Image (cartoon, rainbow over all chains, first blue to last red):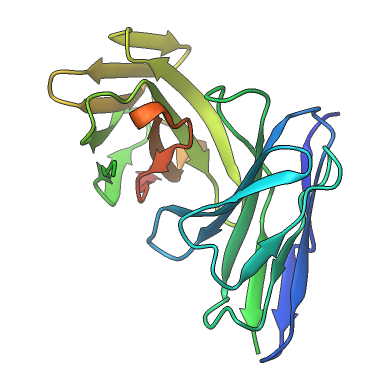
Length: 112
Length: 112
């Protein structure tokens, strides 16, 4: 079955560490997105990519980095520069613009 | 930029109809979506409507769009306990951008 897979489901980060969240899709979707969700908040866009080897900053890109070397994969690195990284991170993909998103099941990141 | 507002909570009795409301600010919004999020999971696209439509029905779901008032609603008929979740409204197409703006979500609680 086609879908979008995020791993790990839970991730713990120590202060000063970089961590990478995985997002893989086998839907052959061109566009991929990373969102951050905090309790009681809507989704805030971190980065997005509409084509391989190209990506754009979203509204809250500071302290995060991404790569898009393959169509199927869009990993997100949360760097030590991100001062408040504890949140639920959601990856999404879209076949074509405005068709609506398919979301992964999310990664919950906690700073310990 | 676009602003999307939703009420935070809605409580209904099982078997009743639920109506979740959403307002947005930019009249040029072209694509409007409803997503459902169950606890600890990603979002699931429920339905969408284009701005040239007034209504869309899909089984128990009815979407109504009032462009004049910039108001979108999602009606769930015969609400079941399994419908308990957070429902997000999202709109896109503003200023030529297809990146959606999400509301903060409405928590639907269905009690027996």
